[in-house]
Image 1 (cartoon, rainbow, N blue to C red):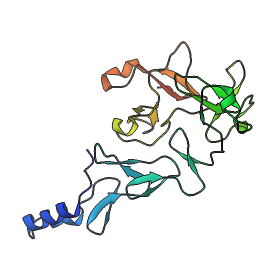
Image 2: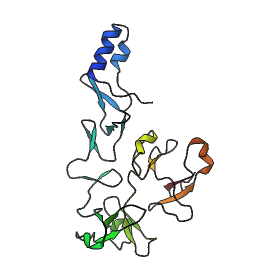
Image 3: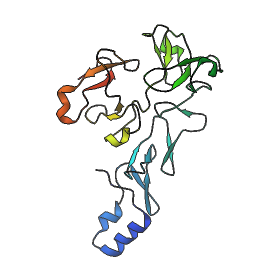
Image 4: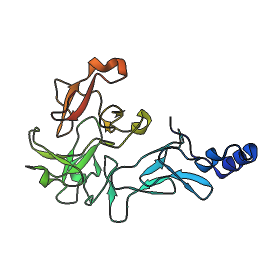
Length: 219
């Protein structure tokens, strides 16, 4: 288990208690994904502090760390997967009807996957027609640029790293990324480029019965 960030007072207390006998602990007081800044441990760049576990977890792609928090550099926006992208204005905005999507070409309101509706562009032909991490869903009656599940492909090392996202399961065995669990083998309801895998044979390892994996990569 990763060690929690140390405060300056904790480090000072260890020094007073150990005297000259605990130099190794003081020389290397930080845990995984942490760096020593002056007299305290901070999350390394690309990681942020989980306020529940007090461990440093990975940011989305392209994010930087400022004061233990992941932020997108200037000019980039955080997409639904938690990655920093050039998200165009109007794309992915929450909506309940097409009339609420007023920024062209993202004038189509899509409701799918049990989540709130969002503005996007439709029709589309290939991924080149989509921006901001969206992908062209050609399986729909009218093809549209589909929003990725939140947290998809976020780097992870423990299940806590994926909590709160639609991609809520951490594949700790192979990819070390957050993936979507509980998909339907019959409906094939995974995000574009993914397929629903029957992983029930690995239930003894705590793996969900089904997960979405890149096409051709089912275990």
